[in-house]
Image 1 (spheres, rainbow, N blue to C red):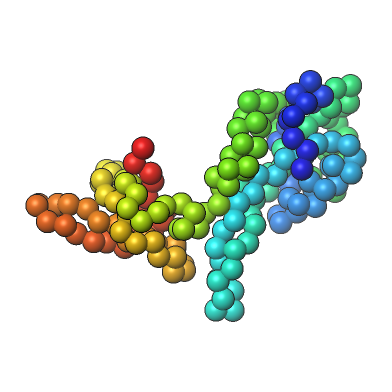
Image 2 (image 1 turned 90 degrees about the vertical axis):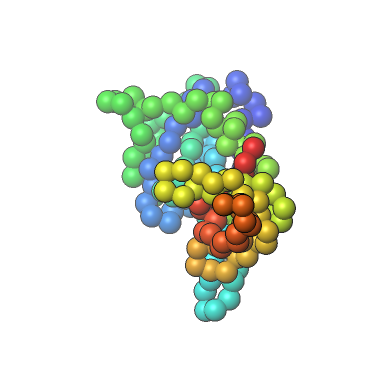
Length: 176
């Protein structure tokens, strides 16, 4: 995966809207045409035929970030197989800030987009649980990853007592 290690080499980053499930093919085709590409992905736990497995999935489904090198035009990116369009304002593409591309690369390197219960939280970790529009202070008692809706067990105090609840992973965030 080409990166922004040489920031002077990339004049512009753009976001390409691609056909469904064609993100990897677009990335590979763009790179074959000497256009750097970034496809942020993360591991997601899925269940298929009663088996749990980790599958790599795009963080932004149907979008690939494409770099335009110095001296090159962005226009040929429209002809990459699978590209349906380049996000633009009028006739000009909307530039994705290089800082954002760098942050996405750092997040990928740190596995920040991996969405498994074990990767997200550890037993004893302080968390906040979303309850409607409010958040509840709690800590993780046990990590469970039963599908669907990966879950974790949390413990919180209310009315002077300790309570345990099993909540979907998407309602929990780190307390810090």
